[in-house]
Length: 379
Image (cartoon, rainbow, N blue to C red; front, side, top):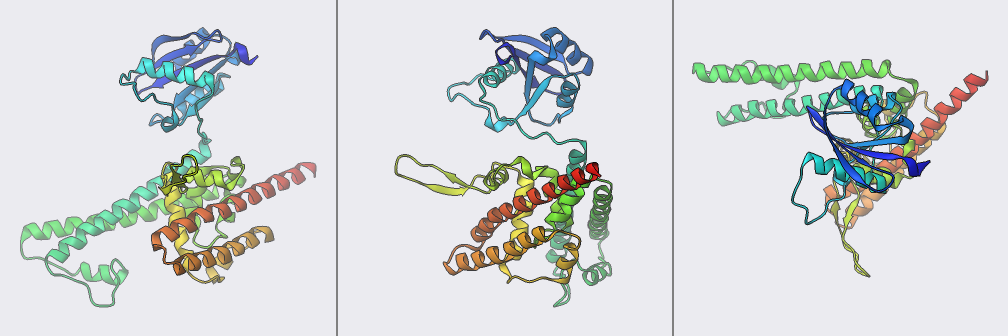
């Protein structure tokens, strides 16, 4: 029975876990701290009673989901809580591990906490890989900026009409030499860093290709389906799948838009409605990928050879959704630009609506995979 459930709140750090329990009778008490080890957690679960009568929560953080998976193996219901959505009293100026654990237990029992989606091992591994590739791209951009500004300070510019960091531009950069040994050493170090960053990006993209090939049928089908959309290629599709997980876990596309943080903030009271900039409180990786993809819809609808190749083997329903996205988003982009809206705001609006088409394709693909599995089992 729900009334017999004990709700426990864990405040986790790198060495210990502060534990508090909200009893069914109403009392909330602290149980002190335990070492953050598998043996100590196992002993605590045995001490708190039968696993079926225990619910545990802790805040998402840098410690990952190891504690969640351990508690799940022990038969304990565990929720990982979104830290930014934990209620906070405006007058509370004392913050300790014990008080945080007690607050988690109290709010967990009252249902005031919001759990996050916990990825399985496959999604988490792919997510780590695409985030490593994103970090490598940022490091590559910094390395290029350092070398570019070093050359610019000395009045060195590439030939007119040659784009920066192309093969021809790098070939010209490698022919440069400097008289002062200090400048030559600096130049060689900057150049080496640019080349190393490029090799790192290529190596990680190759690893992403291999990870997708060895992934489950659901993940491969979802990544392939999302690539039917204009502006979304393999790395972008893998980022969305790794960060969001099953798209059908959102009952409506508006919830996916809220998850990305691309919805407008609002401060309304009575008959006054005031909306501001986007909240940016969701998943920043999804928001970045979708924002970049939205720029592709400033061009008129078309079917390039690359896009046709990406859509090979997909169902007609998925292709129809992708084609509808091109027409709708392109027409909306032109309509908003015609009204004199700021281009970046228009692209943000297009990206928010693009998430609706991403949700539609995800739900369709997941439904097709389930139907295929049912037919294979029946056969």
